[in-house]
Length: 122
Image (cartoon, rainbow, N blue to C red; front, side, top):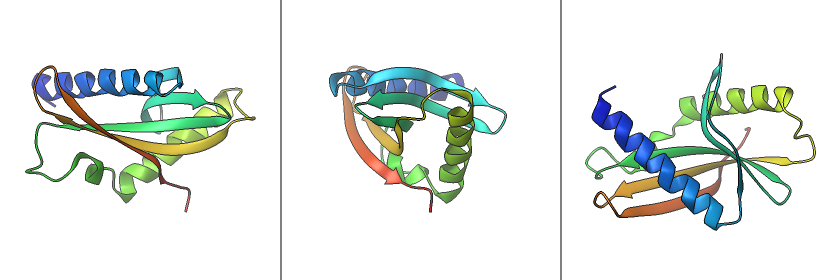
């Protein structure tokens, strides 16, 4: 992965974190890595535990950002979330899988779309 793509991803994740904080979420982990995968953001809001995948694009020539979270990526996120749930004390929180899609309009402007419950265990 190029430095430019890594920088764009980090930029998108920063905007996603700011967005979630504005929505009243508490950020529990960022770039949570396990032997089975990674989750961009783990957050909590009320009685829910959010596992958030962030996809950032400069344009739509390769499709919308949220379209990059296909079945294979969803399964990897679910496996990673199961790992997280086994390691952390979050039994009282209801897990939820969200996607935050970000289109980079310029270095300063991000168009953010939040897809709560974007996918589930089935």
